[in-house]
Length: 252
Ligand code: 13P
Image 1 (cartoon, helix red, strand yellow):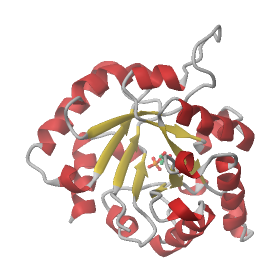
Image 2 (cartoon, rainbow, N blue to C red; image 1 turned 90 degrees about the vertical axis):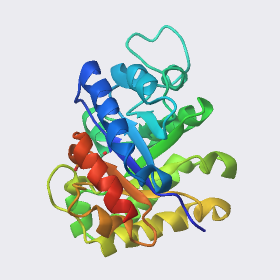
Image 3 (cartoon, rainbow, N blue to C red; image 1 turned 180 degrees about the vertical axis):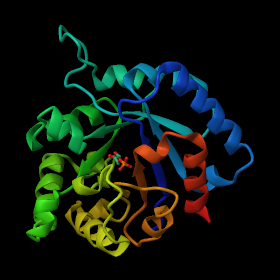
Image 4 (cartoon, helix red, strand yellow; image 1 turned 120 degrees about the vertical axis):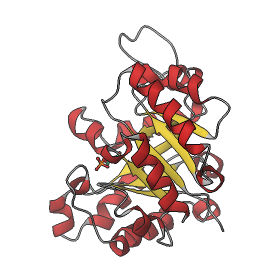
């Protein structure tokens, strides 16, 4: 089974609308002279405010746009909420669900994450389901147990066709924004364990990303692992030139 590599950028709470559009323009310019997009899917997840203008800017190219979060429901009297349906209408094709920052700062538990995965699929968005262990859990040798619980809970109740829409991102919490990373072999072992948890019919086709302090220095080492199909990148995705370098390293 050949899975198409995916490089996903999570901009978190960075970049104004104008900066997002300028980045889109710059990335298109750089990609014109690169074979990168023939071999790698590129996904940019800006803030919700920048979704529509960025999606408009990259329309007609192979660059995809995604959201970083969704709220439950579709439309209604829900002050401040943004549903998957609205994100989809604004140009998102993917949505990050269950990022550790959402779990930590917005108190999203496994049950909420599962509801959001279902809401994303209902809205015809592809969820990028984030899972990962704390440093303490890793020290206690509980990584696979913790990730197993997170994956099983998020996929519960999904049929194989629905589960086939899910991209999984393995992001060890201790590696996010710290410069510390697991060895690529370690990360691959966890990715293999995640693949075994997927419904058998779709396990081989599921894309599993690694995330946490990915940069041009290490992306190739992660992306070449047998069960890792790309990366979810935070800080190093904020410069178009650095993202471009990572795209090229993935295909070289
Ligand atoms: P960094 O690449 O900045 O470590 O962030 C990773 C991340 O959280 C992507 O979702």
